Length: 523
Image (cartoon, rainbow, N blue to C red):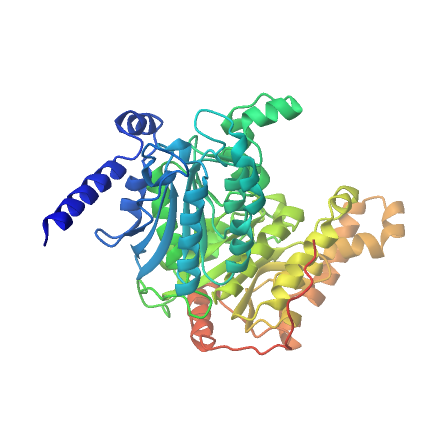
């Protein structure tokens, strides 16, 4: 090696060391004082040691005469051990210690490059968001940066086109306002760190100036707002470390891209073994008595593990991921403990999105139906229950992955369709003893048909019960099974065995549909 090259290598090593210091000791200490890890610490947790390959490390702020390390964003790819498989994934980690992690000309060129890498090589794309949004210049407003806005927007277009091709994850580990808010808005999975992150189309200062609301980051767009009220967040976690763990577990249910099948894990035991008698005590005798569907799900899943999505939003329906005999499944389950498990506007949206997500990535769907139907009334109509409910019906009809439906207690009205009833081509349709499939419950039918008699009855409640007793045999699962309209009525203790056999049978399922660009989705 010549002297010149030795000198150049020495300079390069020195420059790399300076860049790895990010915003400097004071900025890093402030990051830690806020309870946050740095972007490089997050990357170290996400990827296997020594596997991360950084792109654009030498990128520097456009026009700057000083070092702006990596221009505030770290991009690259590496290997992630998700507990089931080791996979490649790409990342863009916004570095809040450098210019507040803001989006600059060079930094976004770097992010564009890593997006192209993820798309080209069809590997998951992960954003670790901790950003103040678009960069207007060091120390304040820079009018020369305004024309740059006219050349932005590729991020959102490309993310939309990547949707359903590769898994897209946007972890909110700090602020994400303006441009960085649509990164999670267009992603598949959005974990949010409590008290550390926020997202919104405008930050607190802009909101105060424009509409007069004086709010903190947490009040405006914190994890509680988006995981409980808006539904934009998918999971609330306590720390950066928990957030990285959640990303890894989420990916463990997914293939690398839409052309592959999701990886199978090891079954913790014989999936054909009967469940213990405790499952029989979970389900109440009366179809109108509430219970927590999580308890039943725990008996069915491997290791009793459910990775739930949006657990604090639209709680009348449960969606998430689990495994049965190692096979990953996407779960859609009514939860009677909240609103009786009825399908309202938010529940329909939540379920539809999860169905579309699973179908895009070849993850089988398991429907656990205990549904009284869709919400009715003037309030529901004004909220658009028809169009929102249509999303869920559309999603179920369109899905081509294996679909398995278990009627737990009841499946009434259009709720039966939305929870993958017979007309929606379930590959297996089974029910528990005592279940009912009907346009509505026996009491509801009686209250309509015998309305005039009930108006004059001395004891209307007793009359309803008496008449309903005569209706129940006609909507019972025994009658339905006798007509061949369900595949079987099963002992709840056989649930894992039956579902595992269905997953084995349908693992190579293929459906061919009439060619089209895409459906016209309800708004």
